Length: 501
Image (cartoon, rainbow, N blue to C red; front, side, top):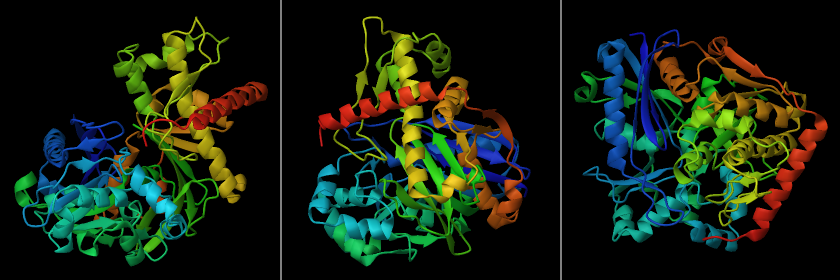
């Protein structure tokens, strides 16, 4: 049993990857599923779509690998975090579509909590800020807007889970209702210092304790899949939210190591070791992973729009057909123009955290065309990463002495142009690994660690391999001029403070 099956359940697709004992990939499968946008700023998924696509890609990957359930030592799950599912304990039916992490409908609930002066206690206990991004207010919204849901929850009839928890429950035939510490730490309901659900937080946000899953280590025996799913029962022994899984897949086990993942959004995590660092710059303090009951913490910065800016160029503006066109187009842009895109399509994430503002373009001229817009879109991801980078270094002075290299992964890292511009603007090396599937690899590692397939973290870290290092190659004067232009553009967007709440 030298194979591990990783489930990577993402925002726009479900993926399954079969890893061998040497962490090479035996097979993979992927399926997109529908997104639902019932109102401005609202994003939903059908839980059944999440489930059926996950089962399908698992079966496909197992078949393509030419193996059967008996060859698979364990399943690891990684998931889009904060996305919230509430379902019936008896029937397994979701009472509402899943509310996705990007969804902003609970802005009013968040504003009310802030007005009541709750931010201090919530931030102190959770390491998070009050924002619609997190799961807790999404659960409260479902309980208050689905007829009879709050009364049913009070009677113990409803369950809450993030996507990992929902998949685990379905995979085990409804036998196991559990999550790991990384996913729990993104709910606004979990005390990251005690490692427990917190009664005061539950009361403030209005979520009954009976709905909540058990919280376990990220590498633990969670249960096993029902034999009918994959032709035999398979142990499920690793779970982590996608950004924490990518941190593990990038082998960022030492304090001071940092990774940034470029998917739909962009998420940067800085390992701060056993100390939860309190941010003065609106970054999040989160659980990076929990092994053997010990929590390792990270500072995290979340950008809501990264790869989705490229999707906007393709689907919204129609100026590209494929993401691969962006680098060559950006290269052709007019160097005399300074066009800035602030892609606040759903508000701004760290370090600004303003859900009300909307995006804007600055510096347009009569000669601005597709190449300049593509250039601005790719560069916006680099500028946003710079803002996180600067905030992290200010929050954790130890990072000034740490060897500063950014490890990157995710779809956008395929663009050499973007990665080079990132290195230029950070004035630091950017390392792209050989194995790009770092999120799935992190989930596989956690499962394989528990199952005895993979070694302890320091030995696993020895397997990390560099594919390409992008070194900074921009003059200080150019860098400073460009960063100053970006800062002015962001200031302009924040000053507008418009849009739907």
